[in-house]
Length: 500
Image (cartoon, rainbow, N blue to C red; front, side, top):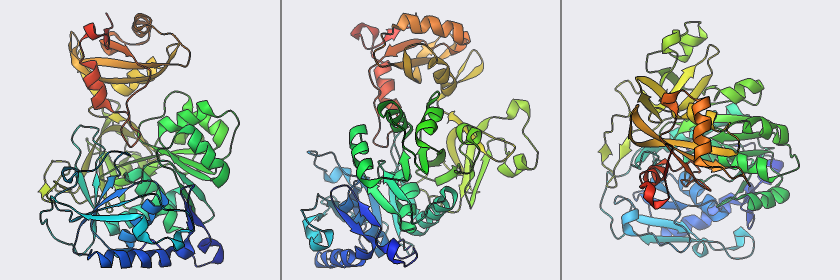
């Protein structure tokens, strides 16, 4: 799939830039940069028969390397670059990858004057074992986020990534005049498939930010002046709190965990239209709001399915059913979401490249999303939370998202995350991790007392733990596995305090 040279060949577009704040290059310069990379790969004997372990970060060298292997038709596993000072080992690279390819910060001067050998490093994988071989349609292997504690490699084709990218271009109305800020990792599907590749496909200017934090983002913003930004919900919240003056964007796109409380309205008041995108490592972008949608639709839903995407509930209700007025009954209006996508993944493989069957999909191609949701009458989708983020207590279903949303209305509580925790008299146990608002002093006993007045007894958490901050995964989502481990620490350590 060719992403470059699909934009209109106008002087203005060719002069648009890719930058990381340190270096920049124009689209016009990409062919020369790719020629230098081609020479370097050839000198090392790296051909299309070799699958690569590509360690990618949000830098211009990382972006150029990623675009080169896509344009060249290489099979590769896309991995996050290890943290600085942390060396990768052969055990962290899949066995079927013949080479590890990574980048370092380029030296001073224009990128076209820098030999690619100065910022691209290719080393043999000492643990290499021959895998399944090359494919007619080149493949990209993406690591899943690991929110279930078991990261896997999802198999995508270059062609599928291209189709996914152009779906996002159409729904988000991206164009060459946009200036896109990307502070989300390129090594994850949100940063890669919804932000970076769609931006490149239309020839937009792109600003890449690694390890994005508020001060760094605002510094980039002043020099780059973005019109479109892709952010995690937690970063949207940081921006709302940390910036005092409004700054209009044409569009902000968020994905992952749900925005809490009134953050959506506060963000839009300061920065303009915000849309939610729904997707996964396996299925790519599934649904997204449009900047033309009414505010209420953008707040309450993730929009309608994208082109070539079908969505249904576990009870069989489809988007078409709802649009035709065949609404599910009052008792069955919520269910587990399933998706079928022409540009979705082609299964999982293990570290040896051998296919792994995990019962994620059925013979009809429907993939279980592990999320609960509703399909509204206008075809828009509400995502209520992960299906494993709920418990049966006193014979009734309790959704973590509902408890979290209610508890965030307690004075002094800013963020709440519910995780499973042992057993209780009501059935499965729940622990609530609460982050206090800035400057607030909140006692677990006060939070518990408020829960008794706000929630049904079955929905009151068994354990309440106040923490200064929540652990996050590299993609910006809350690391719930880490929280489960913290919840299981005995109360005597002082890390967990029972609610009763």
